Length: 572
Image (cartoon, rainbow, N blue to C red; front, side, top):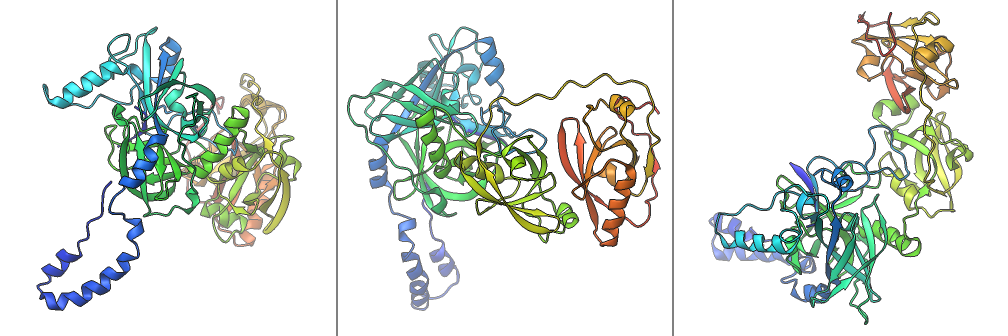
């Protein structure tokens, strides 16, 4: 299965009658039960309308086709020819950070349903029988949009210097000509045009775009007010509610499809702000940037991606919730870019093992794995090892914290509910704008073949540890300011090996307390055993990343044999 971005209604039939007839009962016997069953369904008639025609007629004039043209260069090919690149945010493989991330790759199978002709198409052109009307239709269409003169062959490699065309959808949110779409529809475009329902073609200006949420805001000048739609409240949409999708699939403008909200809060691992609405309303290539409407005609989502084995709709589509999009669009309108809240922490999920280690009853919250020096969280008194449970009164975890912080207005001071030392506390943190320039870590020094302090064998947790000195710092390429206890050997099998700890890793804290010698680690473990804790939690630094690792503690050492699982520079 593959996910696909959607750049380039089914009515429910009741089986009640069939079930009743199959029972073999006479008509007189089933009449009364039929009335008692159907009566409650009548109350749900608004959720399952007989027709969407009136609603579609009202909304269609506000939905537009978007076409963008880009001159292909070697650089642009390298950036976008990857079929897994949707130009959306990508969380790195390490800790999560409630701050904007650099663009990354989407999950396998995720496709943006808006693509660019030629090398930037979202997949192969649909295959039809040779000589069939559909083959001729799509051949003519692709020659007109992206293929043919000056264009690349759809699905084939794009030649540098040629033009590629992206086809997508959008919708008007203001009569002055403000148009919302997906960023991947217009990314890298030289020119952008908007086609209205009456086939009027207007040149568009890009007011702002945001890679992290895959949103963009355009401006067109029609010389007269344009019909606009309004954002609905996506938080009020429920699983099972009817929705309407309007867009430009395969260039077929004004296509209306219907479905329901299939799920809420979906994450596609495309970045820290994932919170998609899932729908079964058919969405295909060309639908990207188009609106998802509720039955009142409010936009509750922006259609962005589909999950598909072939690039076509199989009834699993994803839309950016309007309540998230509205905030970003307002900022693009005011500043030309998105301004997100930032508190300067690196976080990870709280697992049940970690919760047990910290005395938490439930595995909820976001565990702080690192702090930005002089960042808002550090200034507020937050410490590594704290568990953030609430931000501004909203419950958070490792997945939702980045979004909640990002949506908080810059400059606002909010309460931060945390868990520390076995009890709940509240701090006040001032939300800041994310700094664009982040300091890069210093290059490590070259390793040398020297020996440091004798390691301490801690077979009960499956590793050997040593106090850091200059020799070990150089051997394991650690900075002069590095604190903690270094891992010099791993016992296989064993708790440390099972948790992914490696030779050269540094244990910085145990049970939320700093450690500098193996003896201090032994003391923390002994204390945890005395408190009958099933595990201890260690803050482990691997390279530039920090993470909390829960390790089970045992009264006796496991029967394990060191296998010399050495890391770089370890030549024992």
